[in-house]
Image (cartoon, rainbow, N blue to C red):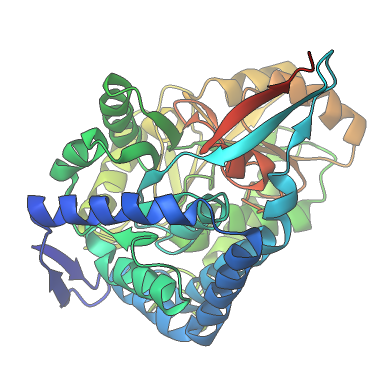
Length: 452
């Protein structure tokens, strides 16, 4: 049984029975059978169904948001925003998928030559709990529009969300088998990946999970896309607009109670404004509304599980022993972790070298551009970096030196359907969203006509 527990109240919400081996096989067989027809469906038909899906998301927005908040503790206003983003990604691919997947004409000596983009088949999505709807839809919308079908292995603590997502696809009139939820534990993922009908895997999650899944898929010679952890840096130069930068950095670190791979986790501030910036940052974080995640005004709720809060507490304690100083927060009560700020952080502390998945900011200072480039790149992760400066030429010159998958200037790192999203190093490989994302699970087929 997979159990869903409300992290704020500690109460059990529901239990979900795991699928047996025979039922898993039955679902994968159905998925494969559905794919044979779905891959031949017209773009007009796919657009119609994706439009239906967007309408259903809008109609049930508050219901879905409450399920998110109940299962993993996301503040309700942020949960509503998550559903709205899912609507956006559906609308984006409804309007753009056909053009993004159009044949690419290549001029050669042939009578005609081009590249076509054709679906691979049944794709397994192994998804996390922190954005239980968005992570699924940013895979599903492009994958379905490309003609693939999907099976979902969601995190054990958000099976209520997984069930609702599957129901939404059916209500939108997608063919049975086009998108199915597999209610299974992680132990059964290997068997699913090895199944003859499964063609590829996408995973959003931890480095450990990504490594395990990629290893299994690699042995079976099946494609993977991995979106893993992150330890994004927020680089604040001496000419930054301090007031606006403070607000953006607070949002970057503490939204979703800090439980985001692309959250800004390492705050690197030029030494000339360090004290002023920290003082204003501290004041801003102190004012964040904390409380019941079901209340509209709440910005910080609880973490998704008590064990996750315990892990963050251990990273904090080890860093304090190495000299870090707590200037705000630092206390935990079960799954609740206070908004926390650490200063005097150096590069050998866990809060600098590891991913911190919760409401904890680690702050350091720097002197030169070369120094901050080295500090940013010291991380084993490479999702993104934010630079705050009024000197765009300076920022432009630094961009090639950063090893991350994204660089945002005067903005927090975020995902956007119009832009490719993904990382480097231990943050994974492959891209989601935009043109790159919709083509990840396609066969790029070379076609060549010759006239005798």
